[in-house]
Image 1: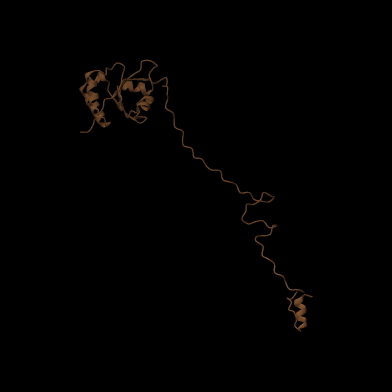
Image 2: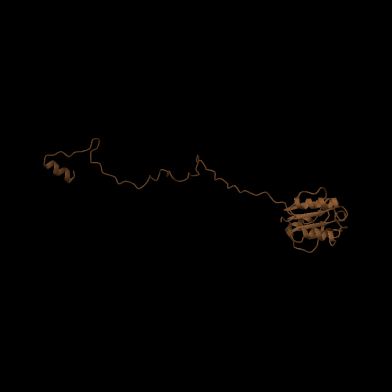
Length: 199
């Protein structure tokens, strides 16, 4: 018997005891967390039997469409070109028989805001592709003198653009020199392509 029980018995008092228990219940200190045999609720599931594994999503890498490289060699059916001097943004491409030093050629060159770069169709395999010349010299306008020259350099019908450059096809210089109607058509084509500076 404890001292407290003996003291109460000497006074004739009954020690109160909780029902279903022969001794007062001792208070237990609160634990700081869940029992060690209980799994934590905020941690990842273990890899034991019956455990569900969560698949980690694989990051998606977007790939841009591959750009077609600029051809560094012309195809067998296409003629190359030989560039002359100049640094303008407009290319005048002549047929082998045309003369860019003629008075008409000088007049056409003066129509532009800046002198053009003259080029000829190459007579052998040493010429470079027109696409490569446009990319290297940053031409924005290409004027081809003569439908035959245009078909040779493009291996068929000429497109409206070649890379970033606009393509304009007019009559050959030899025909422009002797045909007034061809010269008027050439002038209208220059205006439509924006080659004639506005006043």
